[in-house]
View 1 (tube, rainbow, N blue to C red):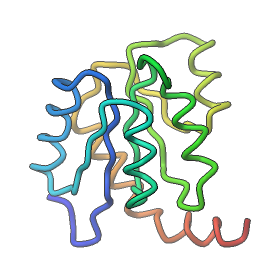
View 2 (view 1 turned 45 degrees about the vertical axis):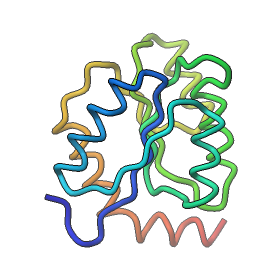
View 3 (view 1 turned 180 degrees about the vertical axis):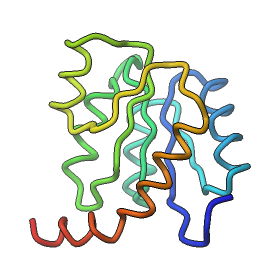
Length: 135
């Protein structure tokens, strides 16, 4: 279970089944989760209540995940962005780096890998916030 300092998580995926399944797993682990099924809705949710972590599909119609990531990276809250995608390869991983996505995971991703990433984000949250204050 997550501790009382749980991170807020925003899941963004145009596949409702994938998003809902991931949300169920993380909710059972104690993480507060919100979902968006497209880029514009994700940006609106992030504006209303900035998430700590965004789990982001990259290949979405309309506004793709790379554009969403770029816009989120430009906000004051600067969430940790984790791509969870079916697109691998150097070109896509480079696009992720350019879009300020430090973690590019290829589906299927084991739940324990995501939970480990969320635990890392919890442990490092204070340090990352301190660094953001220096920018």
